[in-house]
Image (cartoon, rainbow, N blue to C red; front, top):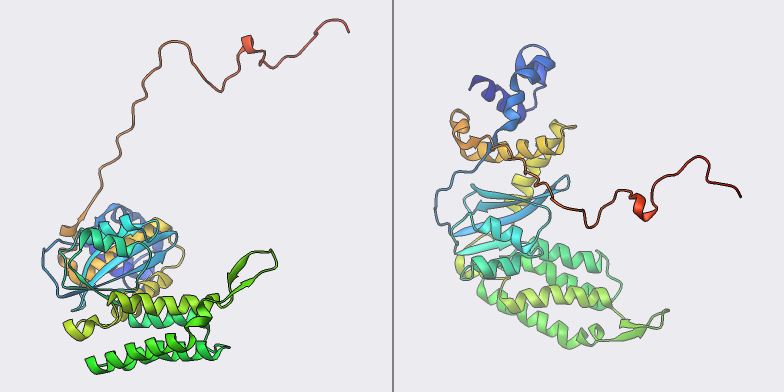
Length: 317
C-alpha cells in the first residue's frame, strides 16, 4: 500500500508528481497508474444526526451532492447529471433521517425529502434566500418596494429569537399590504402578449413568502440547528475547488476520483484508506443474438429495391 499512500499524499496536496515520487513525474505516474482504478466509498455507520447540511457542487459536467453533519463530518456523497429528485433521493437513502436538514432549496429536493425523509424538519439556508432575492432585485433596486423587500431579506441575519421572528413575519405581511398590488399588475408587451409588469419583484416576493409559509426560515429557533449551508459551501466546496486548481489538467474521471479521495480522507486515516476502496467489476459484454431469417428493416442497399450503386454502360440514349 506504499504506492497508494504516496499517490494519496500527492493527490490531496500541492506537490508535483516528481516531488511526490522522488524521481521523475513519468516514473511516478507509471508506478501509481493502478490507483486511479480504485473507487473510494464512505463507510456506512448508521448514525442518526441532529442536523444534516446538503449542497451540490459542479465538477465539470457532473454534479456532486454532499451531506455534512452539523458537527462537520462528511456523511455521504452522490454523483448526478443534475440536481434532480432521483439524485437527491439516492443521497438521502444513504443516511438515516435526521431531525433537521439544512438546504438551499435546490431543484428536486423538496419532493425527494417528502419521499425519503418525510418527518425531517427543513431549514432553508438564510444566505441563499438573501442571495436569491438579490439576484432578482439587484443590489440597488429601482423601486421603493424592491428596496424595502431586499432590506427585509437582509434583516433575516439579525433574527435571533422568537420575538424577532414574529416581528419579521409581521414586517413581511406589512410589505404585502403596502406593495402587494405591484406584484399583480400586468402590461402588454411588444408581441401583443400580457405579462406581469414587475416580474422580478413578484419572483423575489414569492421566494420569501413561500419559505415563510412553509415554516422553513426559522427552524433553527426550535431545533438549534445551523441556519446556513456555509460549512459546506464556504468550507468543503471551497477546499474542493482549491484541490482541483492544484491539479489543473486532469480528466473529468480523475477529478472525480480526486474529490472522492479528498472527502474520504477527511473521515478515514490514510493508513486505513485502502479498506474503503474497491476496484469495480469489468462490464460484461452483451452477446448479440444472430437474427435468423430475412431482415425486416435495414440500412444496407438491396438490388431488388434499385438501391445498388451503378456504373458503366446503361444502354443507348
